[in-house]
Picture: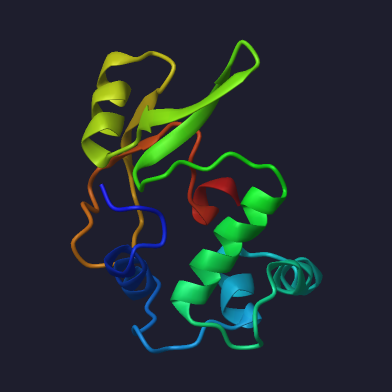
Length: 142
C-alpha cells in the first residue's frame, strides 16, 4: 500500500476529482466538492498554509501536516484507518475495497439496502454496488 500523499495516489485522486495532474485546486473547487461553506474552506486554506491555487500534492501534504500538528492520528498508508480502543488509538484497520466488502457481508453493523446504488460520476467504479442503508440520494431525501 502506498503511503499517504504518494505521487501515484495523489495523481489518481486528482483524476477522480476531474482535475488533471497539473491543475490547481482552489478553495472554490474544494467548497463545491464537499458542499462546504466559503468561510470554512477559507479558514482551512489559511490553517493549512495553502496558496490561493494549490497543487493536488500540496493539498494532500499540507492537509496531513495540519492534521498531525493538531494531534490527529493518521495511518501511514492508504486504505488504512485508525480507531480507538480502550483509550489507545491504532492505525491498522484494513480499509481496502475488498476488506470493506468482506466486513459488509459479514456484519449486521454494516447494513446494506437492496435496490440502492452508488451514484458516481467516475469511470471504473461499480455503479451497481450496494449502498449502505444510511446513504440516500438527494432525490430520496427531498
